Figure (cartoon, rainbow, N blue to C red):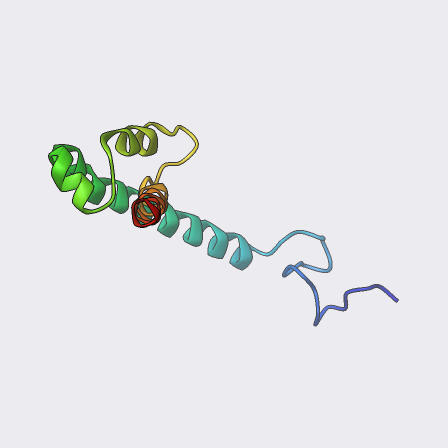
Length: 97
């Protein structure tokens, strides 16, 4: 007896051919497209931060170097995740000092 039965299969697999079904592949593609669209939308929404003055950025807990690091990060297309982390980190640091 195999570890996974047809009912409990980790992937929807066609038992005759052993291939992953088209439904599963299309769902994964749809999720990736939605994630890409969300990242693109977030990146465009974060662009106006570059036009803010240094004092305005400081009010929200960011610095000009935070923006450069977040937008310049080649491995991450959506800079808002890193910007939020940096803002929280900077605010905590300011509360301690």
